[in-house]
View (cartoon, rainbow, N blue to C red):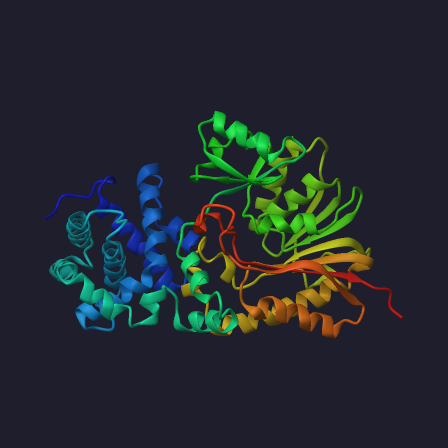
Length: 449
């Protein structure tokens, strides 16, 4: 009988991270929900951080680990099925020679300890040990064999690779490579309080290195907990990706406008609009729990606005007008549509495994319905900004073109279009400086003839 695992042991983190990976891969649970389901109030923050880090890593590189597991065991699936998740995680950890998270010896030793600590895996601890050591003895050969499989070579399902390759033939490889990197921590500075340059000085005084990317944008050299950001609780700064920060300025807002923020949660763009203008906002979202995040964000940002924000939050489906619309047209609409999330997959590595190819077409139908419905609530000469965090054409250019074809009273205005997640050439040539993948289209409503 082995001694119980300590929370400081890597085996402890491997055991629980493998459970998280299994909940995502085998039960279709979102990563955030899976992490929450295996968390414990008795778990130390450091141990919880290790579990979360390994779970993100394991899903990001699950393709490598799963293919290697199949090759090394010569079995399509192990019994019990959950053992596949431990094996995939550990083999992914052993893959990288240049920047390993842990030494090879430590991974093998702690993997065996993790297997021994799980009643379902204990009989297979010998298999775990043998497979991991076999991989290490002939690593170059095993990696070469694994990379013949596109899932191991790219870290994505075959259908995803095929779609990105077809729709972005000149950029498909960098897009997939970027999606396997750690996302940067980009900040949006509240211009009512200070400029980005001034805030960067505050960061430097707090010992935090950062780069100014624009008048309201700062890129941290290294991510930190939000409570370490000067003025965060006072509404001086928010965490928001560079691509997402494009939305509010494109709205051309003026004080007193009546604005609809559809699919508003978690409220980052809502807050940005209020930082730019004193507008009346109806924040709409189909999820009441997610809408609470909007309310929390607005309450925090209100401390740095200089006025009491006029925001009404309502939980309702955007396409069901009788649930929320009183008939008075809006001057401007920000429509951040539900989508595949293919542009933010580096932040949510579970997306690539949870999405199915058929989901994109189904989501596209929903997007068209919401877009057509909300267009009817826009005032003449009003502006609608269409946003998706996707790099798939069905959720971007194709969606915008079809909308224009259906609505003769819609006129396209200048907008960024597809925002590819590529590094800024003027900065460090690293994906740490790249935005998320987004799509923007902007329309104004003409007077009907």
